[in-house]
Amino acid sequence: MSTILQAVRGMRDVLPNDTPLWQYIEDIFKSVLITYGYNEIKLPILENTSLFSRAIGSTTDVVEKEMYTFDDCNGVSLTLRPEGTAGCVRAGIEHNLFFSREQRLWCLGPMFRHERPQKGRLRQFYQLNVEVFGQQGPDIDFELIMMTYRFWRLLGISDYVYLELNSIGSFNTRLAYRQALVNFLTPYLDLLDKDSRRRFYCNPMRLLDSKNVAEQHFLKEAPSLFEYLDEESHVHFSQLCKLLDLSGIKYKINTRLVRGLDYYNRTVFEWFYENVDSHCIFCAGGRYDTLVEQLGGRKTPAIGFAIGIERLILLINDVNIGLHSNARLLHLDIYLISVDECLKGSAILLAERIRDALPSLRVITNHGGGSLKKQLSRANKNGARIALILGKKEFLMKHVLIRDLHSGVQEMLEENNLMIRLASIFKL
Ligand code: HAM
Image 1: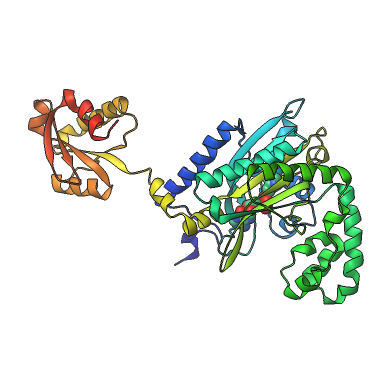
Image 2 (image 1 turned 120 degrees about the vertical axis):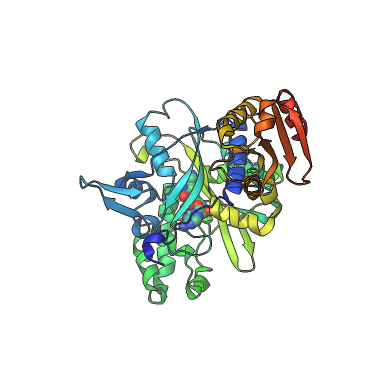
């Protein structure tokens, strides 16, 4: 096949068979977010490149290697957003959303990272981002974790997922730790691979994520960031853990958890799922109390998380196939057939009257003519429950024929009684 007819590598179409599950998941997210008092914010997919290098950190993998960056016709450097937090902070500062008030926001949409595509790793992927501004205490960290747990329960996956958290303290904590880590790593410098050596000089904490088995071996002995935590971060973290203990949510403190984006401080967390061949982080987040100020706003504490929708769906496919049948929301109720060409307009108008009277029903009118047999076959292909058949003779007598497409049973009805009969068939 010629490449022009293929989607860009790492970018996937979500086909009509799959969109009902996506919609079902999104509806659960939205209904939960409403009950927690969160408001939607819609953000551009393109931002000025400097936003991401300033917010995410110029030595992170995302900024160094993964951004889709190009100059527009005016020579302005733009980037397809690799994540949602930076844009949300930019919008909040630009529109003065953080001035003496809290904000609880969410945003859903595509993100772009030029990573090597594989299962669960795409170049265009969707995230639900949830961000809270103006709250300092550990209670909001707790509320966000509870919210994610509610999502998992409603999606039927809570028994299969694990929570890990850590505190990475303040900027000063990390400065002290960085030095300790550099001291520890210096004797191993010759053993580091090219990528790790580069990280050693520009962002040594990123080495803790090393996938190199030999490096992982000696990194086990590396000092723990947790030992360098400042007093306030310690108190914040232990209060969060106490709240989590009360909630019954199981979690593990992973003192190696540092996250790959530079804006975090204090609480960081990840939800993951594990099976024989993969360890898949599908939701991650943490506090970023200095980012608003760093990007030119007022000092505003903040915390958020993002869920990767494709990874969540991989997990659902593995553990809760039943959700697919719940999500088959798009079944068709009624297929309207007119046997005579001259009744086409009347069929469309009858469909309109059904939609007015019974708005929850899904109704399709046959277009493009065809014999009764052909139209019935289209009704079946569309998965309709019943066909309404308008014949010329019946139409003159103001009658409609209802055919149950499962049993094949037919009944003739006066049009005046149609809505009541449909309501009873569909139990409305
Ligand atoms: P992140 O860990 O980079 O954090 O991404 C969050 C989630 O997005 C991941 O856990 C994963 O599910 C999904 N994800 C990331 N990259 C890919 C990919 N290439 N293919 C498929 N899914 C992917 C952030 O983006 C932060 N902005 C989260 C946050 C919000 N922190 C505070 N507020």
